[in-house]
Length: 151
Image (cartoon, rainbow, N blue to C red; front, side, top):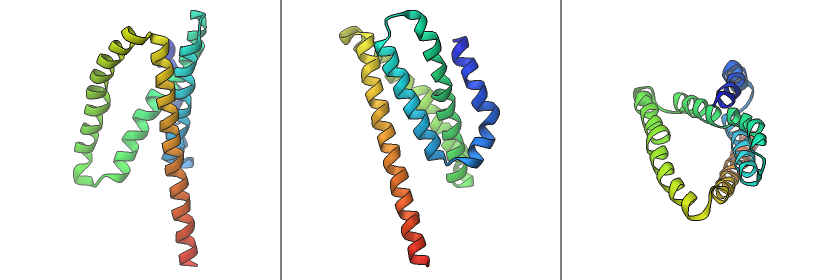
């Protein structure tokens, strides 16, 4: 838990600079790739001491997603709905998702083993990264088409 918490500090210290220079979707892509690496590493590790350095990837996962989603809502949601948007995000990510994930994760761990669950979660993260990559590509195409029409 200490390693997880400490790994979040660099992002928190440099978040404003990162957001100024890098698009939110690109930050989410890096975060989802780090998530996939972390889950796959957990699924393959045999030596428990290797969990400690892999746990440092948590800093590219949880806090990046949490802060980036808050920034996205703050930028994209109309002013009168921002508080509701942030509340819904918190409810879904920190409430409902954890309850559902804990229930089904526990069931899956008992049925298939924790390493299989980590492996499956790795593939879910890969699918998310692929989805984000498709969004980035589609956005680049739209911007390119917009420039061509404007020229």
